[in-house]
Image 1 (cartoon, helix red, strand yellow):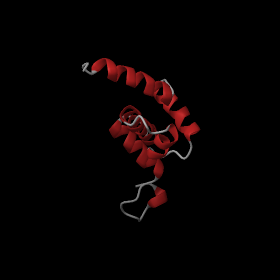
Image 2 (image 1 turned 180 degrees about the vertical axis):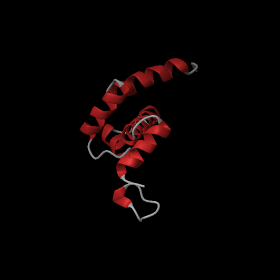
Image 3 (image 1 turned 90 degrees about the horizontal axis):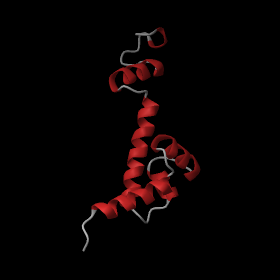
Image 4 (image 1 turned 135 degrees about the vertical axis):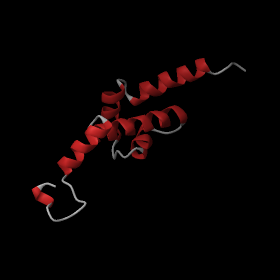
Amino acid sequence: MDGLHAGRPGRVSRATLAKRFADLVGEPPRTYLTRWRMTLAADILAERESATIAEVARAVGYSDAFGFSAAFKRIRGVNPSEFRTSSEATDRAASPSS
């Protein structure tokens, strides 16, 4: 137990929690959370054509589309609109013709 929380069982410092999380999961909590949110966003972009980028941003916890788009591009390598376009092209190629 660290000195900051001595005498209060069950409590750990934020730094200790982050280290334990990273040791267990393999990446820091914020990195994991951002990656997970972008995975959810990619699913929404692919499944809900009518959802705007701002709506997708809000759905995964971002208050503005600009910050969301920057994070999405940093994690996925393309902006959300480009991802949606490539996702739609992949979906059309994969689905059987009528």
